[in-house]
Length: 63
Image 1 (cartoon, rainbow, N blue to C red):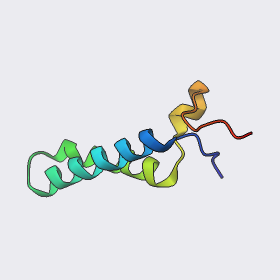
Image 2: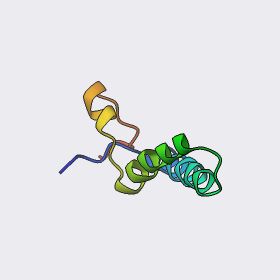
Image 3: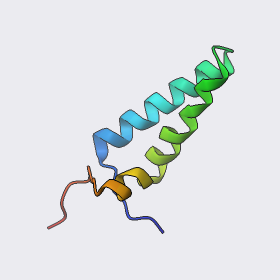
């Protein structure tokens, strides 16, 4: 299982942007807008494979 590496604001932004892109695709604004599935999924899961590859983490540090 992937480690959580997507923090609060990042997670909210990914979900909103992903949802808006999918809505645009459903409205016929372009097939490329289905790419919104990626930020929506990573926002909902709380884990981004690209963040893992590049060693990034937007989650707050646990003490």
